[in-house]
Image (cartoon, rainbow, N blue to C red; front, top):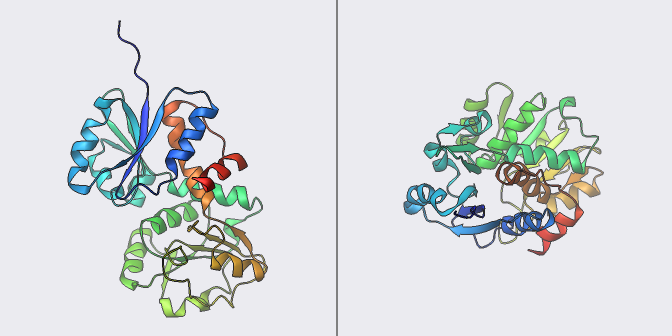
Length: 278
């Protein structure tokens, strides 16, 4: 009689060595006494399809997907959730027992849960949200903000046609604003989100003038290296509520872990410390 296989999960991307996901999932596996493993896998684009086909044969029950594979894996899936289809990318694959690949995107969920944990009194429906950036992360953020009732998205990006493309997908609740005018749209904002890499260690600074920020506005930055970005520090000085970006990484991981290993994990201070020290 053959022994039951130890379940394997992991994260695929290129590059992948920087990922904190192995530390996060490894912590949960240990905490809940689950016999399983979560491994980082550097997979280049030409090898992606073959790798995805072979992973279930090796005992993998699913993987997280990061840059640059999020869009391409969606095309390989047999089943796609509505939110992954809307965002146009997947960050989670579940390899089902019947051989089918199920694709989901939990980035928007992680984004909203992070805000709700960090700012429990946040009211998304009381006014517009300003979103900086028009990449894959922005798509997930816009979809989730509209889903929880934000009445209008003021979207601005250094390359305007990318922002216009998002407006084309999400409709009349999205208004595109020129990047040079970005500082002028903060006055009416109730929620402000940076989805760009500006302000990240090693990247260009976030230089949008923040004079228009009003006291009490919720400001969050998807960048979490450094944890307290210049945007968050200045917003805090102006009396805004601030939420750092690390929690989004932690919360987006929880639904995937539950699907793979059958336990809904807790996102707490201990987990934050694990991720920060990874």
